[in-house]
Image (cartoon, rainbow, N blue to C red; front, top):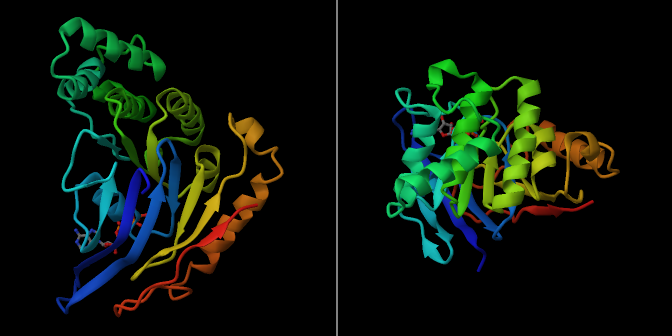
Length: 280
Ligand SMILES: Nc1ncnc2c1ncn2[C@@H]1O[C@H](COP(=O)(O)OP(=O)(O)OP(=O)(O)O)[C@@H](O)[C@H]1O
């Protein structure tokens, strides 16, 4: 059994027209090993965030289930931390307090000096030294998301769930924070499940890219191994001979699935095809 196992998960929502239900995705099975960094890419509406929310325990599967370390996920927990694109910081708390709140929940027996040392370590890791006392309104988007990442990673969750965390950050800052995330991941070795629309980001960060077909009845169409050795940086990754092969392959998949129906799974209860494994 894999460390994080998504087993035949399907999700239905009530049809907005009031007539029955709509299948968002069907029979999604993903096996993720401890310490693996997996990214999901697919067109808007195929169900990426819904899948992430089910892993987080913020939503429930209509069919199937999620197992983490062999135990069924049945609700939110500190073993899975989510970073959303809208930052979700407590606006009345400072940078330090936002992170300390999470650290105190995860380590209720720690005394104040342990909490302070731990929070300061993560503030330094994301380059926010000097901004400890600022409130979110005084921070740029990039700084807010650094707080979000520090807060999530500081409690050392078993799984880090990233839902387009850099979508609202300008391209230059995004590149810098992506590299900071690599540094943090190198240290923490969290298992990461990330949703993104950014193909370059997925190649830079992931061990594997899961490509979702369009909904309704979306499925994981392909799993692409990112066969570019680590450590990676934005400058070196594009020099690797596999970079453009992987990039072109992912983009072609997305173009093929830009209009619905190509390879869409079955909404009528029949099983769907297993994902194609792609490795250059
Ligand atoms: N609570 C809900 N009730 C009804 N339908 C929902 C609900 N949440 C999501 N949906 C629908 O499920 C589908 C998948 O939504 P989801 O947000 O997971 O897609 P996504 O792939 O993450 O999209 P995007 O890339 O635009 O964020 C969409 O058609 C959406 O309208």
